[in-house]
Length: 316
Length: 275
Image (cartoon, rainbow over all chains, first blue to last red; front, top):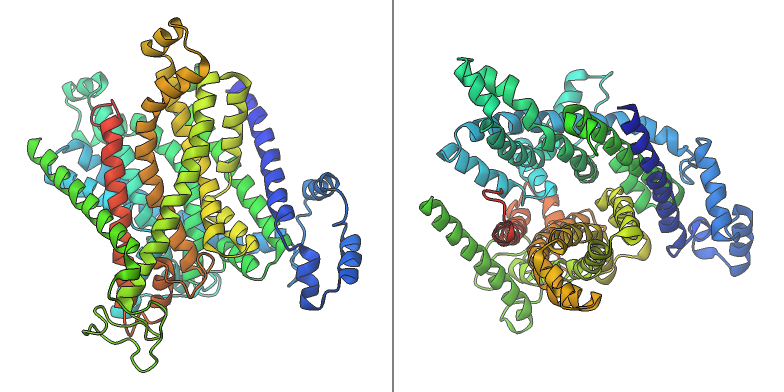
């Protein structure tokens, strides 16, 4: 296991480094640098050149990258030129909101996806199975902003039982906070459960044909015990991998959902930074999100190995 | 089982029919007897269907049907062109990486992992925001983002086909690398890549829609479906149809591409019962 962690770490570092290079390049090579944004329309070539010199923007690209990287490694991700807030504190302030949103979405998604998948696998070919696999396939074609609009129309406009936008801090009003999260989390979950169901269903069908399931049946174990104890764990391998890939989708979805529902999370921070051309903030947040995503996938990889002894002991 | 197969067959043809319909309407939009998609009529805002406006008008008095059809033009051209970029570059990279292996393969798969490390929507947003919003930029960015996925599919397919007898046979007959890649591998890899291309079209239409919906994609006067849904959202209480019409059209189009792509993928996938 330790050897595996070491090997994966050895792969993680170059990927992280490349991620930082790409983040830097995207921000540095695109037209319109910080000096232009700061000075606006009144900029003359002279003042631009002077400011560029002050900010070190006239240095060679490689030098600028290493200066930036050394700052980043010391925990200095820069600050917003509009609000003066550092990237780290802005992210720290908004991360809990995005995490609550994604966690809620994942929970709803799993609590729909897992039971549906199990029933489908047990009753393969039944009307329930056919409806649900068809429904899951259809749901995969519904972009999150479409389900968001449908949910807002249904629950906020027609029935008026849930708020369409707005976020209340948990410390102020726990109930209002949870109510505000229902529609955004449900929106994301509607895109999550079909993936969970599809993956788990096909793995579960394969597992149910294994000898040890027949053995468990022969011993006279209860159906629920066979399904939940014997079949679920070996069937969840692909699900774990897919969850890792899914986090990327979830982050993208969170950007849209946070914007639609006006939730002040990381996604909203990014969109605001883009609208206001807040380059430093954008660069810092993108780097943090991308590295966080890489690290999460690293953890998912390890989790995968602990679930599947073949990978732990084999070639991996 | 026969009944199930017949039903999926019908769905497949419905999906193909819908794609053809949208595609044809988008192509001949200029000669159709419909009003201009950008002409505003302030006195006929949010009107229901009438003879002059078959599907009514939007919040600025523009013809909804015309905007839907011209929107198809934009959504489909971005949706079809961007995956072409991914298909050609990613397909070539994957094919070469899977055939030659070695250091080149390590380099390619490493690069793929790096690009995949970025949540695609965020990268697309950041880049379009700085390159400037235009349909061309949007297509280029979405095309670039598609490269890693196509590379993976092409490489995986090439790896399995390279080990097959017909490749060994071709090599034994004295075929060079170029001949093996172009004549033996490419025709075989093209099938899974083609199926994946259609799924890529569906994903691209969704991402283009999401970006335009947020006001970061196609610049507003142009009628993209995402723009229409974003505008319709403002009057969800008064006229929900303004958001729902483009939403339904978009959903049907994405679903159709997914259905056709998935059917083709299942046909080329030798695994039985692969979902």
